[in-house]
Length: 583
Ligand SMILES: Cc1cc2nc3c(=O)[nH]c(=O)nc-3n(C[C@H](O)[C@H](O)[C@H](O)COP(=O)(O)OP(=O)(O)OC[C@H]3O[C@@H](n4cnc5c(N)ncnc54)[C@H](O)[C@@H]3O)c2cc1C
Image (cartoon, rainbow, N blue to C red; front, side, top):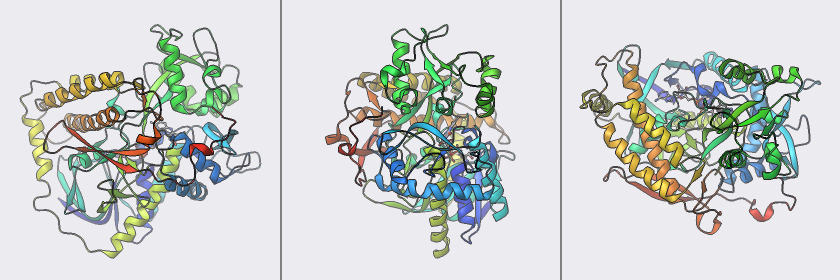
């Protein structure tokens, strides 16, 4: 079946819904394709909040937010993106409020704000209240609000449609191909402009806060076309996932006063970050926890976790402002944060890298300003280089609304100016070939086993602490897993509701993301932000103040070609950092 829309949005999380809403306001026809029902997107799991320098609780300015974002990103952040972001997010939060988002309030009725890791006043002097929140259900509220607004604007939704291919020819995007779960039918969507907003890929790791569906589909589809993925080596581990499960324990829990303790009850963050302690940026807290565990001060049967202590906080705060996570701890661990210490461990959480874009969301085809006409991206799967080497908490939800909005506006503007491009001959060919391949493999290999081996080895070899020999080993492991993947066979021959086919396809996408990440991480011989190498322990601004662009080598399978892109600088340098260090 064939469809035609001026603008197509892939993904219905915060970025996709914001993009669709703004495209729809731009007088063009808009459809949003999502493999999930929209309000089930991972954005709905975001608890902590959305950071904006509103100054409702304490004095604040966008320049301070911009500095924190650049510093948090360990100076790999593109500073033009950080400037646009810190200014635009203020107005975007008020806009969400006016759309009806039920933010928590101060006693005077303003949007309430709380502290979050890495957010400071006066360029690093002390922590500042910047995170706007709706209890610990901020993402859920964003999704509901934006979905309602899209329904009002007439966005057409194709839910439980799985995008399998992007139609790009002669440097121009022409539409997408998607598989409809309920019927098994393959659809061609013809479009003037396409916005990719398909989320992250945390499922390549064993312990992750990410939903089962976060498998990097569109990143892989982009990469398979020989187009670059940017800064894939920068992957954030959130310091606190529920032990063994990875389910996220929001940083808001430390913003509200929660304390990390080791086996002897020591508040160990005092040793690693004496000023800001438990509210240090995520990379520092994650590494501190792992160091405690490695040095034998962990808790639990395997001594592979530390405790988060809330027991000194009033019950109303725990059950009120932190209701969601209290419920999760009670349900999944049988523990009550009001009286019990809760065991936590770092969990794979957020991709700083992804499909490179400019400030308007236009997808880049190289590191020298080349782009793909009519193709835009926003959200976690995109890389506008806002987060650099490490994202600050609350800056992702902000990224979705600020850059989702820009992508929607510019895609609609473009679509109003151009005619529909021609579709390629036989647009569904590659999708059909992929499905046929997956359903006719020899069946020697079990995809579940390949997935497990990928997740465990990525966790061990390209996780929080990295080194050359482990990553070299991982390159070989991934080559082997990819070659075994050729021999998987989807047992279920039907096309309707074939969830097995989807899972195997997603595994293929994840193997690509893991390949690009490992090659990029091995290539970067320094430590910066979330990328921490034991064999290159220091940051090297002389050689490495640049973005990585990883390309699949289409001639030699398993080989990755590396290019670079300049970092956009705008005034903030390490020399600017105040003498009184916060961390
Ligand atoms: C547990 C958790 C808590 C978090 N808390 C916070 C927080 O408090 N503050 C903050 O700033 N950030 C937080 N983050 C990060 C932030 O929530 C995410 O980065 C962000 O929500 C991603 O939004 P997105 O719109 O890019 O993608 P998602 O919300 O993940 O949506 C992806 C969409 O893409 C669709 N899709 C994917 N593949 C396909 C395909 N092949 N075909 C069709 N559709 C497809 C899915 O159906 C879905 O609609 C948190 C993340 C997690 C996991």
